[in-house]
Length: 288
Image (cartoon, one colour):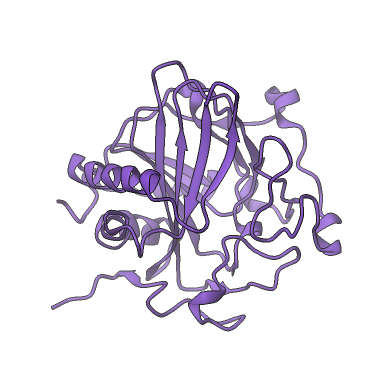
């Protein structure tokens, strides 16, 4: 399997990432990497981990499922995060000399699911501070524009940190940072609310792409994004999101409202740079 991007990154890709907060990269992973990640996704669905969430399930069984921090127990994910071109891609886009695994997310929507991913920024949910935080959103199944993850262009460049809404469709679920639905640190509740983008999408520069396996989205941890969640009958969607940190990223679990996922087991102190077996360096690759 190729360890460099099948389609090399260009200066235009880097510029788009830095300007827009997101770039769609075409054909960067060869089919063998997609097959490996797909095998991991099937293992993950059969063996959910301790952080698994079912965000929505309707009376017909349409399901939106998510699991995180699985790469150390699912070997297929481990190989993808540490050996595939993903870390190299993240480092180049971040402008970082290095890239380390932060964590992984697997998103699974059954065919016909209608459950929106709310508009949000990623980094406010996470135990990290710094500019060098990048996600690679890797679809393992074809995804049409009508089902695509959407981004509000350039919103990573502002200073606004928004209130973190729950992903649970019924409003009754709780993330790791919530002791009860809506129970947040007072500093959190004073944050700005995300505008109702769906009420007047024409006001915003929304970016989204139809994608095929082998493509990926790479995006900044602060860009606003969400998704319709609308899948046609007969078409499921599995996505592996590989998260990476770079040179300036530090561990910050003491944010207003707490953080998700819970990485307190990793042995870092607040303000410490990421290191150790839970956050291995994948770029530059070890030699020898």
